[in-house]
Structures are given as structure tokens and as C-alpha cells.
Amino acid sequence: MFTVIGERINTTLKKVKAAVTERDADYIAEDVKRQEACGATYIDVNAGARIGHEEEDMKWLLSVIQGATKLPLCLDSPDPAILEMAYGLVEQTPLINSISLEKDRFDPMMQYLKGKECRIIALCMDDSGMPKSVDDIFDRAKSLVAELEGIGFKRDDIFIDPLIQPMSVAAENGNMAMDAVEKIMTELEGVHTTGGLSNISYGLPQRKMVNRIFLAMMMARGYDSAIMDPLDKEIMAVLKTADMLKGADNFCMNYLKAVRAGDIVA
Ligand code: THG
Image: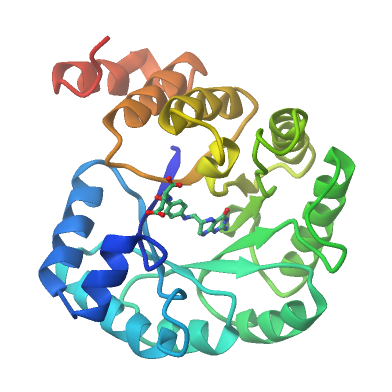
């Protein structure tokens, strides 16, 4: 099953930032309920945009969101102290977003993760910056998996983020992500791959089209999770159709069910 991480509760989004600033619980609760109804597996929660307010904003968001859904949460912060606080407040086993190989982040995060019951998103990032090749991505993925297995994580609990970079920046960015996903999914069998899908379309017009087609192309290579907007009905239709075409949907049952429900219309 594909893991949909609903990206919409993020204070970098203007409406979310305003709702958080005004403590508009209804806005947040409604959005989360919609993400759940549209097929989110996790709700990503990122309270990082109001500088100096992340702790109180994250606390407030967790209480509002967990009043609106029983879905597990994806706790999205680079700060282990915020993640520690948030971990103490969640009611379901969370997905922690994220660890990376950057020195100042890796050691505190490993300390943080030791012995915790959680799943983890691991970014293919190190102190030299964004990956520049498929080998860069794969080498970092391999190190992250070895380190996380070393402290007791099962591969099924590890989501590798290859760090999707925009097509508007370099023409090879799409192939780099796709080739890396295939290599990770075949050579590190049992882990998942995920990431911010819409990074691919940054700087281009008609971004939703780019995101939808890219999702299908990534799924063909083994991509089995994404941080994305589940309220985009078309991308959810692409997801279910691609799942069926991969042979992951016995007797096309889920595909047929989605068609009957009116969720897939061509
Ligand atoms: N990897 C990991 N975590 C991540 C990211 C990633 N968390 C944050 C981000 N990237 C993914 N989340 C979002 C949330 C919302 C939007 C995009 C990514 C979004 N952006 C609008 C857009 O792109 O058009 C514009 C937002 C606005 O300015 O209003 O909706 O890569 N592990």
C-alpha cells in the first residue's frame, strides 16, 4: 500500500499560518478531516514558519489535530527538542520527519531516536549539501539505513527521502530521483521511499500536472510514499491507477472500487 503523507498542515502556507496565529481550531480540524476523507495515511505537522513560536504552535496543532482525527502524525521539524516534546503528546505511533547525515543534526537525532517506538524519514542530505548524483543519494541512503538498523529500526519503519530537486534548476533532477528510487528499492530491500513530491515542479507553471505525471513515473520505479496534497483529486486518481498498473492491486479491486465511488473519472 502506498503511504500518503498529507502535507497541508504547514505554517509556510499562508492560510495555515493565519489560522495558527489566530488559534482558529475549526480551520485546522476541517482541513485535517478533509485530508483523512481523501485518503491520507499520515498527517504531516510542520509549525516551523513562525520563528520563536514553533514549540507553542506545535503543541496547539497537535491537540487540535488529534481532536479531529485518529490518523497517525508525521512530526515535521529539524529540531530534536521540538520532536521530543511532540513525541510525548502523540496518541499514535508517529513518523518522525526527519533525520539527515548533517553532523549537527545526526548525533542529537540518533540519541533522540534510540529506543523510541516510531517510524522515521531519513533525508539523503549531508554537510556537503544536496545530493548531486544517483550515487550520492544511494550512498547516503545506505549509511542512513545501516545507522538506523544499528539502533534497532526495522526496514519497514525507514522512509528514505532522496531529496527531489526542481526541474527548473537542472534537467537531470527528475531522472536522478527516479534512478535513485529504483536503486534504493532494489538494493535496500524492505525500506520505503518518500519525499516532498511538489519540489519537482518548483518554478514551473501548471505545477499540479507536473506533480501528477511525476508521481506515476516515480511509482513505476518503486516509490511507495509521498508528502503530497491528498485534496488534489486528480493526483489521488493517478495514484490509484498507477498502483493498479504496477500489479499491486489484486483483480484491480481498489481501482474498480474507486471508479464506482466516482474518484476516478477520465
Ligand atoms: N521532504 C521531507 N519533508 C518535507 C519536505 C520534503 N516537509 C516540508 C515539505 N518538503 C513538504 N510539504 C509541503 C507543504 C506544502 C506545500 C509544499 C510542500 C505547498 N506549497 C505550495 C506550492 O508549492 O505551490 C505553495 C505554498 C504557499 O506558498 O502557499 O502547498 O521535501 N521529508
